[in-house]
Length: 86
Image 1 (cartoon, one colour):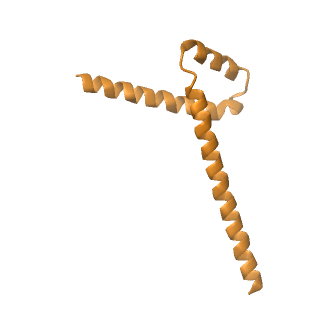
Image 2 (cartoon, helix red, strand yellow):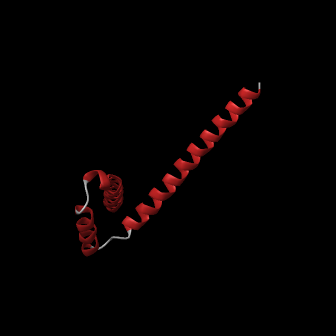
């Protein structure tokens, strides 16, 4: 019975650690997305492109995903404005 209790505690600990890790990863991604969103002007976007150009696709994968999501959100917002104006 003691083995079952220790196994349950170990499993609970693993689950807790996994949840904490996912939470921290989501928080870090939100922070990164806010930092990337701060690059708004064409000059700032060019600077970001130059920085990213120094790294491999694998190294910039997460940033590229965030940029694509932000661009899609901007397109959706723009299209919604166009629909509202007609």
